[in-house]
Length: 273
Image (cartoon, rainbow, N blue to C red):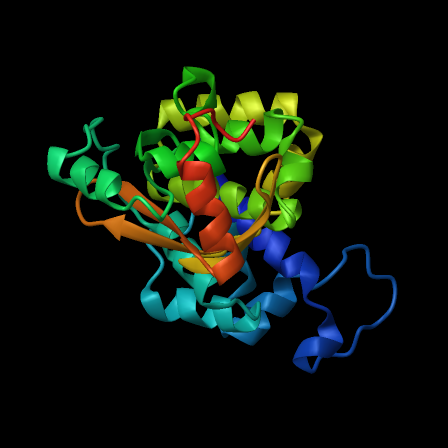
């Protein structure tokens, strides 16, 4: 999963979505491509056509920040896409970090958050630690087969009904893996996970090849719990510096959710399924 081929694929996907008229160019006739041609991007970015072609082919060396900014402007990229472009164009991707356990203090913090489902995940969406409320709301993490959120979202058939906005949940999970693949281009474990999900889930394949990226650190989350009914949360994703880990917290968004979650907590732990 080398970053350079990904760079070309990403640029081609962004180029395909921009129409000439969107950027003040005349469409012309006999267009064989959807979106912009390479020479049109080069014109808008003020670089030579040859250079832009080499950039898409991963043969442009180390493009400067100014060039990447100009290309991003030409292709109307948002902030998340610009960050992704810089990662893909990085000359020396960072070394894949070694696996690290969850600090005992962090586990104690999760356990103390009795009214808030909380868990720790790594860059591959592996669940490393969780509290009891997370087992009731997110997945039955006591089952090792449930300890990867991407697999839960795409391979567990109950997830589509469980998450009220499953497409958004699923696309956010793909975006996390897409970003990890750009940041750690030589991550063989990530490559294996992506290959597994692409083969097993047509939806994952569709979201993956779309090349869409976003860095959402907070969003609403609504689930249809089989016992408690509809629960609404505010999801926060907090990246831990240096660990390649994220803390996810599900704060109840209304009084009804708080009451229903408290009632779930008084039952023997059973998991959401």
